[in-house]
Length: 335
Image (cartoon, rainbow, N blue to C red; front, side):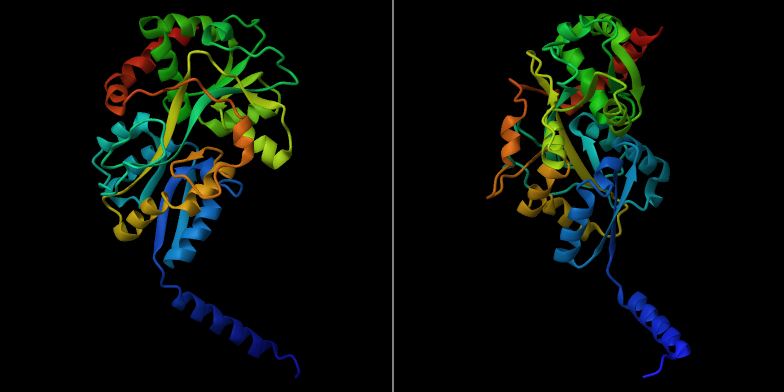
């Protein structure tokens, strides 16, 4: 058969129109932080699995931080295109609840595999880890084992942390220090200040600077070294174990009151507690899932730092004192 360009063009156009017309599946739009939505994050795998099971489209919108995603939703109000906000933690969920923009989930969360009891009518947990400082053991031979030891490191020992006003791990660090030092937290921040190389808006920028060798340690998680072991076959990245215990971070998601796809959004929240979702989390979001799976965690997780205890303030207490604690931190870091 001879090639007929006009006929071929017509068939392509006809096929495109047919494809467009046949894709009547609903699109679930999820605002989240960039590290969740990027190609190497858990987003693409979760999107593929959920779309296959529920015959829909999933669109992840990655922002610089989860708090940034919340701010975007607040600005957009009832006109937001988001059906779900994913990536806040229990420290900031109360502040999000106060906006009145989120809907109750009506799911049973009492049997989840979490280190602490969890109840919340709006926000559903999907993973957790412990906040920690990550270092390269080829460069740092004697990592600090407490906040006091960290402040006592030589002055040229530098750390990178995140802004607690825009970053959930940044806020967790602030609460961690506050829980250890109470009314002397401000004084501790003044002592730690010479070691802070810079404060970034989100986690990705901090970790990028650390990997470039700009700092000795970066605020991250006890589970972060698993990435380097599994993906890069590098065992030299560790998380420093602090004797005081480590602050916990439980990540959560909630659906918007304004969502036009509430049934689908609720199915996604339920899907976060499936084995499929739980199997993706450890080697894509590098955290612990909130349900146990038949396969269990990768063996590498047995080699990670195991904190002596999880320190975690309840969300109402955090919300009642969050601004006061942040202001104390800002005053302490004024130079």
